[in-house]
Image 1 (cartoon, helix red, strand yellow):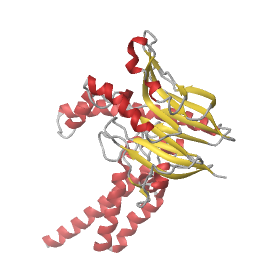
Image 2 (tube, helix red, strand yellow):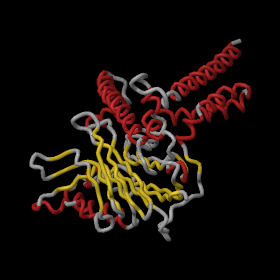
Image 3 (tube, one colour):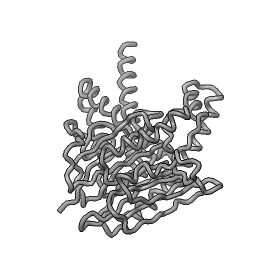
Image 4 (spheres, helix red, strand yellow):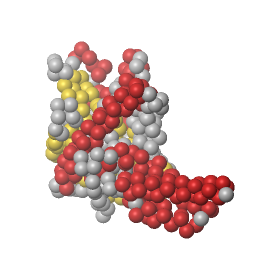
Length: 375
């Protein structure tokens, strides 16, 4: 009798757990159309989506062995949410990136959050050295267009070691710098920058709301008979401090201090989700007005399952998904599923190859891709 009760309890426990996972995943599937402003949990569910997908796949395998009919529930759920599955994982295991024999018809694009050009070390000597290593890594790839976020540059004659623009103009002499942040003496500027091997005939900046936000910038680049519009941006981050990262570790312990830490972290994350929603809407509207073939790249600070991603991408291609394999983590901290940096060409381009490069020079990986205009 007791054994029969335990079997029934175990069966319904796992069924209930399975149904709960399906419901949570279906709620996460609302993120392409329902923003975090409309549904507060949307941003958090987007972060959890890859883990939920994996758990549902294991659920399918479990029920196929234990009771095949029940396996239909997670299978149907995954089919309903196929868009979330498709953006979370890339399925091209045999593709590799080659730096050799780059043809004239190809545009090589690099996008990288360079963390102020200081590198990840706190040592002053290493920071000064890292700016040269960052530039060498980029220039050795022979790029046609370089888009950098969290870039900074000094124009002071007394601080020539921070004349970072000079590191790239040898290969790509044309550039447009957002100059979103400046020092009090107007000798030091920060923001996103775009370098080009080819002439820039027009450029502009769309400032995001807020005193501490960066911008969306664009440049119209002429290569031969073709004009291409390039967008790059850096969207709102969570702005976690060292204290916040320490607080995340405290969440493992269920006590009053952990509760207070979770409230602070939740508030910062919710604010960032809200601001990115507004910024993503602005980016989408601006891209839609482009008179030329275009692509957008940068640090979106949000995962592929988010409202931010789906809103900005629209009908664009995702260079990583088009040519790579796996989850594609692009940010080194917190979790192994944080692909938050992107290169997205429109459908006027073919994406031929893509790579993420991590040499420990930033907390983000460098993105490099080759694209060509369809003829």
